[in-house]
Length: 217
Image 1: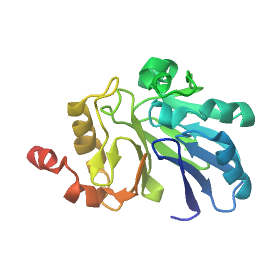
Image 2 (image 1 turned 90 degrees about the vertical axis):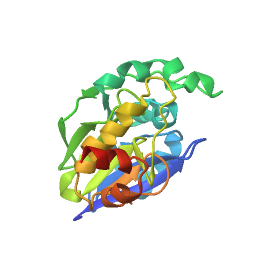
Image 3 (image 1 turned 180 degrees about the vertical axis):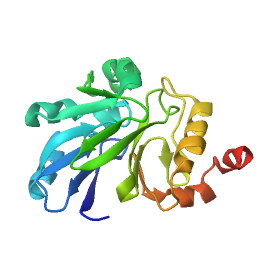
């Protein structure tokens, strides 16, 4: 993975993986799912000599978006989120920020992305893969040339996202994983919204959705 670098900051009350993605020797960073602590995220970028050029959101739950507005205000970066997630991003009752005893979060993305859309950021091509289930507008970001998938809360190490929160759907998340993510190469490295990285090949052996996937095959 020539030049590709990713730094994980585990932030917030549910230990969310916020990713700082950059090219070795470069000056710009992409932030994926800024949970909270914009000061911490910016300090990590400063240590690396990076300026924030964009924020990518995998979905709209509070633990993945709380710092986005602060980062946008501080840096002038653009925020990317799924078109299908606009309501959840905007409404504190749906993104659960109003229920966690902290600040209410209402966010409007600068760029609304759709399934199959290609984004060119830091000279990489990021493919947007819609993966409804954890939320209706959940998306993953796939960097084919780097064999990397940022999966948000859709796919975890030997697990998958919960579906009992607003707009969640258990049938949809299983379909998203089996039909879309398991079609990626086995050596694709998966960086999830919580917990340790994994690979598509490992999950095709050990994930709870494997029996459903095998039935489809």
